[in-house]
Image 1 (cartoon, rainbow, N blue to C red):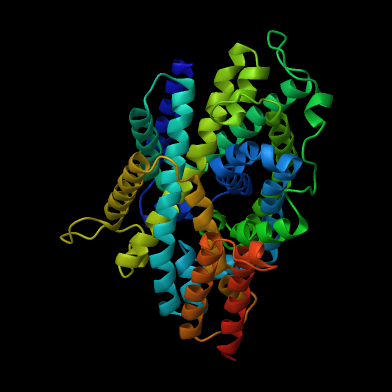
Image 2 (cartoon, rainbow, N blue to C red):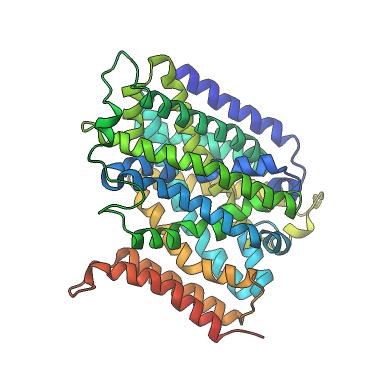
Length: 461
């Protein structure tokens, strides 16, 4: 097991070293020269989306949601399909990161708000991925938490700062293949009754009494609507998604990649839903249920495959999130230099923009690691950050991509108001009264409504 993990991590580093040789300037580093193929962009989208919360978290939710856990990825696929009509305009107005798109749509004021809010939330998400990676390494090796977290952070931070987007696109495609293969093999053995050496429960026993798909007592149509608002929309207007789209060689390639990724996610969603239901039958499961399922149904020689697939689940999201956050920080503090630096190094001006970008990534990775070492259970914070982002940015971004205009001050107010209401919706306890149990849901919906109303009031014709 240890040998397989070591070989895998070394292979990722070798990809980074090879990619670093081809990085000559900021466009190479941030958007892979805008020359990526549809296959590369689709693979990166799938690997980024199948992150720790999407796979590990969804399967862990099986005890509560049952088959309805399938909706996590189905909603993601729906969000991607909704992006296709907007992809051309997003590609045209975007450059390196989401705040560039916001500035081109609304001006510098809203861009500044986006540049300040997103890196803070996304650094927390990187920390959550480090936590997940560390716990997976602890499950499959003898490493302690601190050592595992440092190793995981060092690997993905290292290959991200070495080769930038070129490294990520290459490693993401490999990781997407490993994730899908691992999930398919695991589900196949579970359906077949597991390894003969273990007493796996029968399929009928698994399905009996499990919460059903599409809806059940723990997941209603209202829950689906809220999942689309707070989770699905991050696939239509999220910074990580746009960072993949901006790497495509043209708009046709971008749209093709988005469609390929969405269609890939649909069967994966049902595999995840099945594994979520299967995990319910393992009452004594310790740690992540997906590892308990693997230990239950797989022959011992195949355990390393699942270990590599699960590590890929985490690393593939962590590297993209780290680079997205770092690009925004670079653009915030070095706006004037970066657009003019393509292919150039300024003599006598100290560090080049490329060196500065790598330093930002290193520092960002260190901060995320420190958070992961101090707070060892912040997966909930990851989902909180996504919900707040959706409430703040989804409506303004889609408003602009539809060709509608709004005054910059109103856009900035809409972002702040939507974010505050979404945060209140996630944190507010249930209040007394007939609708008290839905207080958080009402505030979440209000975030989007208020956001749209403010933009409409400030519409610039």
